Image 1 (cartoon, rainbow, N blue to C red):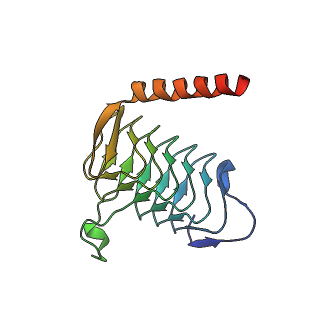
Image 2 (spheres, rainbow, N blue to C red):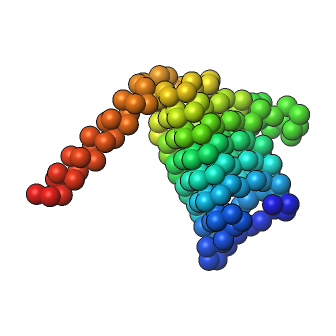
Length: 170
């Protein structure tokens, strides 16, 4: 995309099977991968890179030049910043956020400029990330700290699904 777009009205079909739900903003020179979904009230800045199959829920904010790998999930109102000393107004001082493939950023979480989230990592809802999360770790809180490994998180999620299915069968 080579121009800013303010999207409103009906669902917008983007290139490569991706969609945006209005109203939202997609900045100039942003690259959107295949099969991405961009929710209503999302702001994606300029020169952002979204990998394939990203899901960005409503109200999320992705600052200029941030990079998201494949299959990244941003919960509603998640915020990815790029200016460590705002408002610098100087892109040469910006430190964009990098989110590796298969990472999850919970609703209302904030990732401070210059931080990165490792592959298959999770940042819990409402958390504030002030340093890098290694691969396969789950962090929560303000400031975010290590909680558990991703495989434990996935096991807990599966257990809740089983319990819910069992309750539905009753």
